[in-house]
Amino acid sequence: MGIKSYDYIIAGAGASGLSLAWYMLQSPLAERNVLIVDSDLRPKNDKTWCFWHAGDPPFADIIRKRWEFIEVGTRNRRFSQQAYHYPYYGLRSIDFKKKILSAIKSTSSFHLLEEPIKSIFSSPKSNGALLHTKRQTYRAPFIFQSCFDPLDLQKADINYPLKQHFVGWEVSTQRSVFNDTVCTLMDFNEEFSDGIAFMYLLPWDTTSALLEYTVFSDQTLPKKEYEEKLSLYLNNRFELSPVSYQIIRKEYGVIPMEDRPFIPWYKPHVMNIGSQGGMVKPSTGYAFMRIQKQTQCIVHGLITEGRPPPSPTGPKRFKAYDLWLLQILHDHPEQALRIFHHLFKRNTIDQVFRFLNEDSSFFGDLKIMSSVPFPPFLKAIWKTRNRLKEI
Image (cartoon, rainbow, N blue to C red):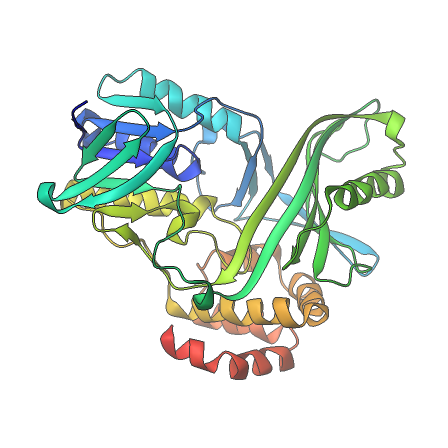
């Protein structure tokens, strides 16, 4: 069979691939010939993406829930604050995928292919790139991929390789137990000693919620251990025995939290996007809003310059902050726990979210830094001094 040509190919239909397709559809690129390839295009209720945002949020029409009050639990005490400028949003992957796939199917110039991707190569002869499946080869001037690890990423280049790993239960209860106006961002488990562990709670209404037992460490746990923590939390906090609730579905995830080189290109004419393009914030594991920024930037570059620009990067000082916190989380989790305690107790949630969103001024950063124990950061600055030179 001959090679099929397209203007652009999107390899992977996850958050980044579908976001890129969506912004293309909202632009003059909607008339281009675009192929979206993934081994499984069926919408599934298997992920929940959350983010904080000032102003109108993206995909406002399909957001499952918005919370203005954010709760944090530290040292046997829980307290909540109102987010006046940075509300917290929950978006289900199934709703996101249904919306964008429906828009793609209604457009004759965008094409969906459900097939595993074998490989992606540059094509010097055609000044573009090739995508191979078992049955066919496809060509485009640019391919945007979120399927494969960057080729130039070496294990030795990764520093402080933490993982954010979790098991979540979406539960339905027989009686009203949840305060659905408040989401619990972190309810720390101070008994956990092999990293940082906390409960994350998103109440959809008074009788249903998503709970995730989340750990920052370099090793995942047996799934049974996460589930024991979830059951214990429901019993201790809400007096819910297993017969008092139904588990509607389960989530499991592992998100990389690590310092690594930024590698925008997989190969010439093949751009890394999403988590493969470095859009996961190393110190938090959040990526959704960074993916929106990256994919919008790509579309703008294609329209104005005819090629995607490098992925958007914030001020370099935030890379240093991420590096320092990663070093502390990896090497001294007990100190990181103290830092989190002070961070949330001595700052408003808007100040914290503004800082984590990399929207804060340098003087705002100084205020945040002055609110947490400083000796661990002094040690982190010294230990990461060689990497700081590279940044």
